[in-house]
Image (cartoon, rainbow, N blue to C red; front, side, top):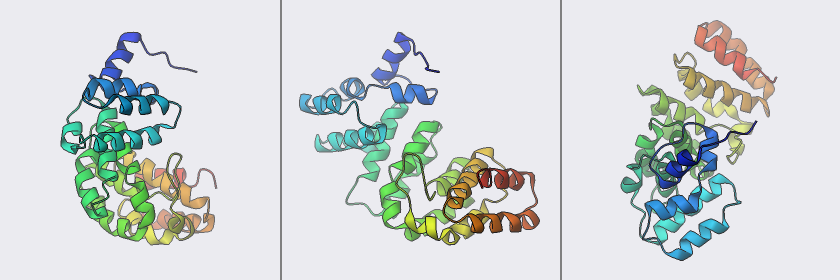
Length: 245
């Protein structure tokens, strides 16, 4: 069933004045109109490129926006982080992710406030914007993200898990973790009894992803956890992990 967005609401979204409240609003934002509103000094050719990209996937348009802003000398992450629009804050994520002069450790440090953003969409853009770096160096990413599992914020704990998922609907797969998910087990163990449903969902999805390539390994982990992590949280995680096995 399609979701109808009122004209005034759509205008506010495209002006960058408000954040989206659900995925349909996220996907409905007109990037060219939003760019014109929040970056009026951007060359007309850049706006035209965004118009021409209207039919492309949203992750491609996010990356293109970051490239256009950087090329125009408007790549200040702090500036775009301050906007009420979650889409614009997402552009900040992609500016961080596409910085060719920064290491993965630098990018993760810069991304941390956005990974902890109050908006669900920005938190997703935060890890998606770093996905290519993580795919290129999965073990380095794993080592860097392990300490995030100890953070007070459930958003940061979830980020550590979500960013390393072997598969993803909008994300490039991590071949190493598809074939050898055991590399990530020490990180998963830390989250095995996490009290937050937001983190539990991510961990269950991680294991479900792994089960598509290594079902016996996932079953073995869940069987062991039944005795070593006998909590309400872990029961939920195991059920989610095994839902398609």
